[in-house]
Amino acid sequence: MKHWHFVGIGGIGMSALAQMALARGIRVSGSDRGRHGRENAALFAALERQGAQLFEQDGSFAAEHRPDALIYSTAIEEGNPDFAAAPEVERLHRAEALRRLISASSAPFSVAVAGSAGKTSTTAFCAEALYHLGADPSCINGGHIKAFADAAHPGNFRAGSGPLVFEADESDKSLLAFAPDYAIILNIGTDHYSKEELAEVFAAFLKRTRRGAVLESGVCETLRDRIPAHLAIAVFDGSAEPKNQSPYPFWLSGYAARDGAAQAAWNGGALRKLPTPGRHTALNLLAVTALLDLLHYDADAACGAVLRAGGVARRFDPKGVHRSGAAVIDDYAHNPEKIACGIRAAQELTAGRIWTIFQPHGYGPLGFMRAELGRVLREVLRPGDRFFLLEPYYAGGTSSFRPHADEVIREWRDAGFSLPEKGESRDAVRAILDRECRRGDLILVLGARDNTLPEWAAELGDSARGA
Image (cartoon, rainbow, N blue to C red; front, top):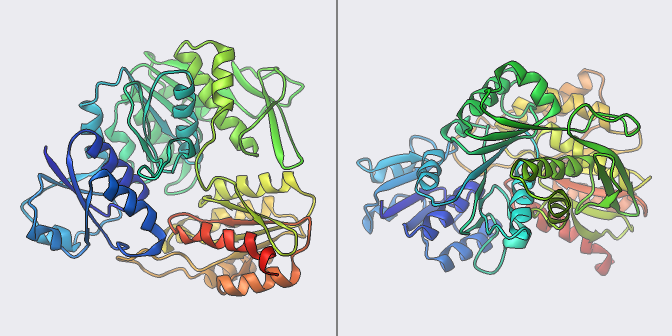
């Protein structure tokens, strides 16, 4: 194929795929509902620098082009104007488009990173470690990898001559389009489906994997009877107490957080500084270490390469200090497991209160996760902590616009859980922070898709300058 048109090219996964197509010599055009929104201005500028031609999402591209295929994601509705403008053009789901690019690749092997939480960060850690080991990887990811970003490349795609590392998404079960050489499955959570349904999806994914897999210990136990016999398996474990060695070959034997940083030890070794805080970070890095062992890298060299990884933007990123003296952190967490990990990591860094402001990434996701989110918040929030639920982000298109944030708060309160609060607006929450936040507290801004969230977090962190 010579020309692909991307419907919704501004999405984090779609923009990465568009860059991969450009790198493979495919002509790229694309449209997006937020074509002129400031939240994606830098991304669109980078795509244009690489050669993509951008349009409004109104079908106007068809006046100039008849591409070979329209590339779309699950988020695109059937009535989209670009579909209507070119009904005769073949449509390819983004997973099928990626599968075709992978099939045409000359990479010596591929690595797919999957799981309900942590896959974007782990994809970045894996690609960076291979890069530091001299493997020159290609990488397509659902986040901007800091080490691979420059003025023309946002960091969610890197072209290389070596192995191909990519994030495999379970949210729409599109990971089943792939047959990677190696797979990493980090966990089975509750973001888009029940744990039981996801277990079936991941079991089917393993059947398509060709050479080896890295599995978290809980995943291994859940899928034990469905792991194909031909796969080389490495299991990593974070559940054992430090004084008791895990029965699994890769285990988190120590973890400590203090003075704004964290350290971890693996397999009984010495504590080493982590790129970002959180036990989840230690486990993601441990998963990559297990993969590198499957690939026969020297253990010391692999560990050193893993710990040099800088990770992904919007993963526990410091954004300065609030006028009260509280540190401000921005994070992409958007499902119950990730939100809990972010809050726990923040609690490890300070004895003060944690002020969490969470904006769900859509009405549908909030509706699906509300019961589980309420459950994990009951577990993780301390009596003095504050949690504000903002109204969900709306990116355009079809939506039920339900449930609203205040409906979810009311459900939680009716169930006897009164700690979370409705955030009426960002300005309203900011006014509360200005009045009540104190030095030694920590402000945690959470949410996906809306790229104005890190800007707002930075404004909170810069407010000391204007006080």
